[in-house]
Image 1 (cartoon, rainbow, N blue to C red):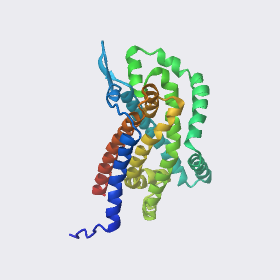
Image 2 (image 1 turned 90 degrees about the horizontal axis):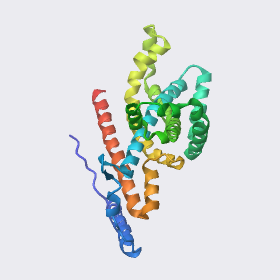
Image 3 (image 1 turned 45 degrees about the horizontal axis):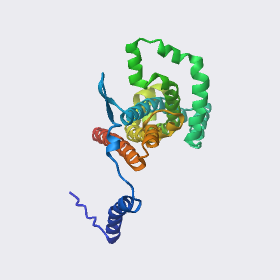
Image 4 (image 1 turned 30 degrees about the vertical axis):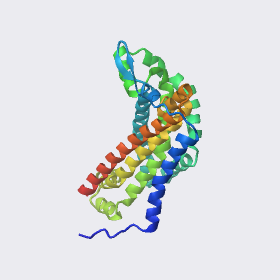
Length: 292
């Protein structure tokens, strides 16, 4: 077995020392120089609260974390659909499909996500949602059905903003997934296309039975990374009052004035969530590599 012969050089030691000293210096300056009065005990009560009838129930921080998870899951599912269709269109023989897919990808990737958020919020929430009658239909559901909808989408009064946020994130992330799918399909050797054509497969069957199963091994690892990116990007929909983790952090900071405690807690919650997803993605990638 080949041994790892890499040894730390002086620059490595200096970088390691800087990584240790700078956070300590930052914490020391906040602790002493800024004269900040840390009050961590204020934060704990916003994870869970005790209700006289329901017992311990999620409070603002846990509610925001759950909304972030719902946003990320729904947005990723929709983004996979948009991205797969656009990615397959990018490798299509049809010039029109390639042109439409490229227009979608380039338009979305070259627009600030904040602009997309406001466009979809004012268009979807203000124009499309009232015309669909979805909100009225939700309030006509039975209590059990409403609880199921709230479990999946969050509180009923916020469904319009939540839907706009999910669509915005899905379209934004779908553009990046389209490129992942395109690269995955193009990574399959040309000989696989030719071999399946020699067996008499049509274009659709070539993709479905031969090319796409091989491309999935290339597509899934970056797709998992894109899900983690969606978790981080979901913070931007706080500007349209979707009550996800960043929005709850802003509300909490405004009511408690505990800036450092609140944002440190929010950062740690995001970090725990993304690190957990990274570990899962690494396991999936290792499993795919083992099967390859």
